[in-house]
Every structure is written in structure tokens, then in C-alpha cells.
Length: 427
Image 1 (cartoon, rainbow, N blue to C red):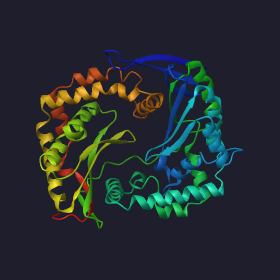
Image 2 (image 1 turned 45 degrees about the horizontal axis):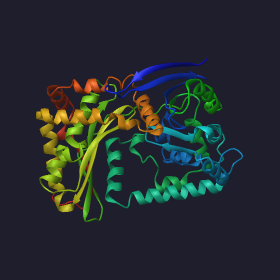
Image 3 (image 1 turned 90 degrees about the horizontal axis):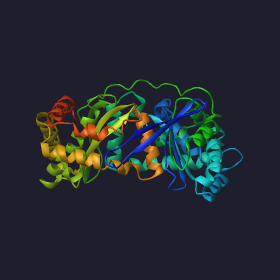
Image 4 (image 1 turned 120 degrees about the vertical axis):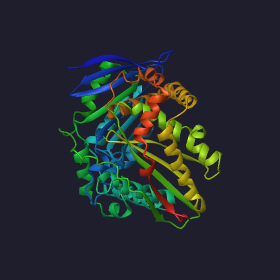
């Protein structure tokens, strides 16, 4: 049984995004048709990702994802790569802290061959010894390289301190030690628990009709093992760990700072996005950039925003500066955090932020890959298909008082946690 239901979604004044809901084979996909270019893009995901890695096997899911395109079925790695290249097919898999994702982009004419390769990758990965060794060596090198800079050290320490004892506090791509110790059985187990027929979110955009999409869904995913990935431990509250220094010999320190945000379903979610756009995410127009760089010259740049894990937003930002300026940079950051919490934004700041967020919305839909990725993100955050349609009106309806109330509710200058990696002075 198949079904396709159109849902208009988008921006008034000329921009619209007709989303169709296509159901087949027990799956439901969101589809945006665009026949102006003969290209089709698919994006899909399962919940879990690195959070499903057992303790001591960090990086198993990441290695498994990397190996899916290193040979499958009758095709060893070189032949699989040749098949992708010959038809200009882009196929890849990635592992995040809370999700395992796949993506496929192909010319319409090559779509049947692209689907075959994607199906083989998920259902019949080879995991040849040579490919495992090569991917392992690359992962170990990347893990070591990530710790060669103060920012890499700060980033690892921040997540470990913010969520101690939970899988999201561990490196999503593993450590050099965990990757070196991974057995092939652990990699196969990671695939077995993650790549399933159910629990799948899918978004499609491009040169394909709803009936054509309905026909390919069971073809692409029907051969996967039944069931959903296992549940991960509930994400605990963000641990406001204060201020910690990670000693790193460097003339500069890297600072990662953050605090708890809001759940994606919270009615103040979009309001908080506007607050953060004004405070830390608006480039040179943001308060932090003005206070830290323009007025005092303490750093080249500073920024922050929301990172979403299991539909919960974490406010996270970063800055790098000379060791002698770290203490002042942090003090100014906390002052601006407190000023926004106590006063809220000005009318002019609100108008500028809303104008940017509404005016830039169509830029998220300039090609089929970006459309599919955006639709998948909406599904991961539990948005309905018509969520985009009313977004400009919702943003324009926001008043300064509403933003001030949300800033006061959410921003916690005293609890703003910070990891400083370097040799900071005066802390």
C-alpha cells in the first residue's frame, strides 16, 4: 500500500516547499519533487549512533559507517569505488553522538545502479581485512590529530565534563586506543544493532515522483534485518561543571563554553534561537563579537549556538585567544551573558535577527541535497511537515518582552561552564 499526501510548507512572498508524505513497505518518506535538474538526493537516519557503542569499544559505529562503502556483496573496495565513480554516485554514511546517517545522490538515469550499491552497502558489507586495517589506521591518525591542538583537547574535555558517565560524553569517533583494540566482531555487532528496517527516518528531494519513490523504498530498505536499534540511556541534565583548565603547551588557549538549552518541543525553542542569534550567533553583529573583538580586541572571533542531542538543545560556543587574555575574555563573555539574561535584546536587535532568519530561509533549499538534509533534520527534531510554512509568521510575531523573558528563563551566567585548554594566566 502506498500513499502520497502533499503538505505546503515554506515562506510567504514567493517561496514555498510542497512536501509530500510517501508511505510504502512500512516506511514513510518526506518528498520534495524538483524536476528542473535530473538529480535525486536521499538522506536517512537511525537514532543511536556512537551512543550505542559499548564502553571500551568507542568508535565501533564510526568505523562501521566508514566501512560500508569499502566493498559490499561481490564488489571489493576498489570495484565498489569504481562503480560509484563511473556513474558519479555520492554514497556515504556518518556517525554522530546520537544518530547514524546515510546519504545518496545520483543522476536520475543512474538511480537504479545507485540504489543497488546502497542496498549492498547496508545489507552485505564485506568488512575485508585490508579495508578494516586501512580505515582503522585512518581513524587512529585522526583521533591523535584531534588532540594535537588546544581546541581538540578542549572539545573532548567539554563533553566528558558536561555528560559524565553517559555515552555522549565519550568521543563519537573513538580514541586511538579504543580503535586499535576494536575486533572485527565488534564492528559487525555495531552494524547489526544499528542498521535495521525499522526506526528509520527518510527524506528525499529531486527528480523523482511519489509513485517512483514508493516503489524504491522496499527495494532499498526491505532487505535489512527487522526491528529497531536498541534504546540508549536517557540523556541526563547538562552538568554545570564550572570552569576547568586542561594544561596544553601553547601560546594560545582554546575555550569551549556552554550550558543547558531547551528541548526541541519546548514552545520557546524558536525564541531562544533568536536570542542566541543576537547574543552569539550573528557574526560581527552579535553582542559577544562586538564586546570581545570589536571593542576590546581580545580575540579574532567568538561564536555560539545550539547543538541538538536527542532533541535537546545544548548551548555551546568557543573562542581562542592569547593566554594572557583568557581571563578577561571569559569575564566579558559572562558579562554579556548576564546582560542578555537581565535586559533582553533591543527592538533593533530583534528586528535585525528576525529579518535575517526569515530572509535567509530559502537558502536552505538551493539544491536537492540541502533540501533532503533539512527535511531529515526536521524529522529528527519531531517537526510536522507544515512547520516551515508558519515559521516566518511565528518569528515576526515575537516581541522584545517575549525574548527578554526567555533569555531570563534560559541563560545562566553563573552556571556557564567552560573548559580552557592551554596555559591561561590569571585563572
